[in-house]
Image (cartoon, rainbow, N blue to C red):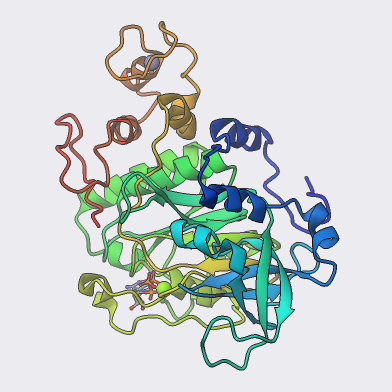
Length: 400
Ligand SMILES: Nc1nc2c(ncn2[C@@H]2O[C@H](COP(=O)(O)OP(=O)(O)OP(=O)(O)O)[C@@H](O)[C@H]2O)c(=O)[nH]1
Ligand SMILES: [Mg+2]
Ligand SMILES: [Zn+2]
């Protein structure tokens, strides 16, 4: 499938998930001035040059508090990452931007006009421009904002693939977190790829933990997900067959890396011939210091063609509140049974005649995955200070 005007090779598997996203989140009509401005800012690309004939299309490659960096992208998929502009938001939208944390995010496509004014108030040699219009986002990587109650925080937009990166240990893999990323990817129509790093450290772990890891890898593979088990810091990593395969699947696409700090995201990016080599923490114990090596999500061009968005590790990844229907849809294994329950509107918790629970009992669905579903639905995952459901006995300790 090709999108109009674009060179992207796209997530081809099914269009169903795209339709679903639009059904899932109808754009809320709010009455405040800010949201009115938000709507004015978002304009279909086809109308861009009518409004600003002198403008140019660009991709947001990094976002800071008062400005962003953008690179011209005349044709979608052809981002001139070596040509970086400092961009601010058109004055009329400033108020809305102040109220809306997600006004501009990395991955956005924007219409810019060149300016000679120094709008950002910073010393820079870069050319400057003003972001006038935003292309409607094709999809969003988002979570519940850990700092603002009930609000969503969009981490990036318009991505084709989500690389869910975890390390086996140092920090220890959290299967529940991987499940949550998978739900997000499924609902947003983004292809997920799971990368388990620090394979070298697994050998020193107890055999029970090793068995738990292989069992989970097996679960994900049986669902059709690509899972790679790698050692990003090995001197021979670039020649490793899994790394090479992974590198191939990044070709011609925009892939975002996500996962906790210290799992090795930047180490991985550096194996894919990035235009800019990423900083990697020298001290392997970085995780325990609670410090981030990568501090901004940024767009990086790869030598093989394609782009990655390297991101700072996040501590909490709580999904946006979802209906049980949407949530169960995000679990591929549960989805298969969701319409076979006795009662319409079954939440698959304690209802009689629940096909999902029956499938768990027959071992057709992994208990761990089902527990993960329950945890998310009942709001017991990834939230600090919430009383945990006693039935959920596995590790869900992402905290802010
Ligand atoms: N033992 C081992 N260490 C690794 C491996 N891959 C990366 N590391 C080390 O893990 C540490 C963290 O790696 P980074 O690539 O900086 O991690 P990151 O995910 O980018 O971290 P943030 O930018 O803070 O989010 C570094 O000291 C790496 O050298 C691996 O496969 N095995
Ligand atoms: Mg990093
Ligand atoms: Zn049910």
